[in-house]
Amino acid sequence: MFSLFWLLLATHAANPSSSPSTSPHVDPAFLSFAREVEDSLRGGDPAVLDARVDVDQLLQRATRGLPASKTFMDELTGDVRESGLHLGGRLLDVGAENLRVRLLRVWMQGRTHRALFRILSPSGLNYFDFELGRNARNEVVIVDIYPYMAGELFSESLRRVYLMAAAEEGQCSLEGLSRRERGLLGSMPRLRRIERLMESESYREVVEELDRLPPAVLGEKSFQLLRLKALAHLDEAEYLSGLLAFEKAFPGDAALDLYSLDNPLLRGDATAMMQAIDRLDRRVEDPYLQYLRGLVKLEQEDLTGAKRFFQKTIHEEPALFEPYVELLGLAIQESDHAGAVRLLEALERDAGVDVLQVSVEEAPGAGGFLESEEYKAWRERRSRGETRDGGPDAAGTATP
Image 1: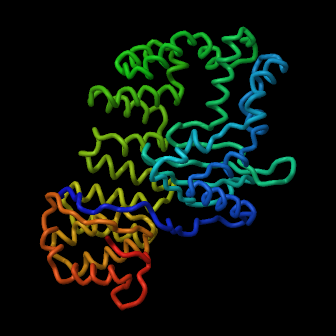
Image 2 (image 1 turned 180 degrees about the vertical axis):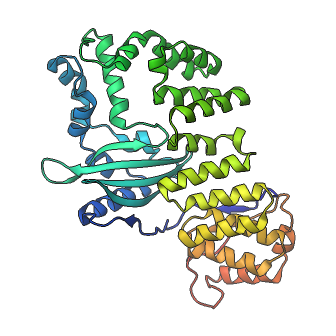
Image 3 (image 1 turned 135 degrees about the vertical axis):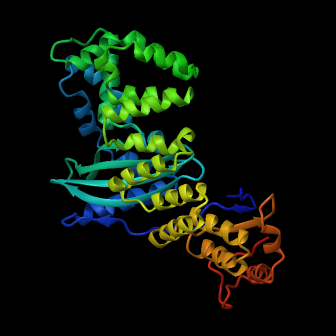
């Protein structure tokens, strides 16, 4: 497949959304809350998310059973209780350019409401599973968050931070701790060294230090994921071996599939990529994964299969602009100028994207398209702010 550089897209004008799926018995108040969070994050504003995380419930989970005095724990968590956790910016890249958020579904797990969000940001693809509940004032709140790439609940990550902080201050007894947590405290000097090595991008040394941890500590999912992050910068064979070890230890874990999709070492293996996408899709049921399937087919030069998946993506979520761009490139390559114009119109109408400028850089067929009568007619309509049928253009502005 050729590399298509000629289409320059503006930021989404409207970022239209499809309705999330819901399971029976979902309380409308929880669905309304999830949509409110979605709308605010799309606008780059983390205020709703930050304000509605129930810090008290989250801290209770994170510190429950920690063998430290209440006075010390109150002092340790005091700033967080007073100012909040500010998770919007920290977890979701809120404010980052081109952040896109989609509420995929709200459902009941037992008696608990949950909301699943897809996040597309400069950091890549991630999913966030929000556990919802009510606070003392009976308001809908976020009780905990499971970021798929982290592989653990935020309360679990926070507990590890507080446990190590208490130990460093000499305020934590080993009594009542699990074997895993005792091993964690015994490994603190090495863990701090690993943090510094990661910051300095000394990935070989990171792996070596991780492998010196006690098995009970290294066996934790968080440290296995850290090991994978380091291996991804090293040898391909070692990275693949790390993936296999992770899969054996945590079969079916979504983090493994997200790492597989995001790592260039695996992108040449179409079978492995499709399997990872299929496993992830069974969990998240996300139209965006149809688009990723199309990219895999494109790499295999299966243009018919690629088109089928791109069209499925558009059918399931018209607001995603990526499949339009891929189909547009294929239409131009095949000299389907009328089809290319329809895709340009659909980009603006359905995906809420302004086409700002067109230029050509080594795109086969693009020169012919730009000289075609179909394209020229579209440009003329566009300059008048009209669609093909002579009505007002959905974008409402003329192309420069």
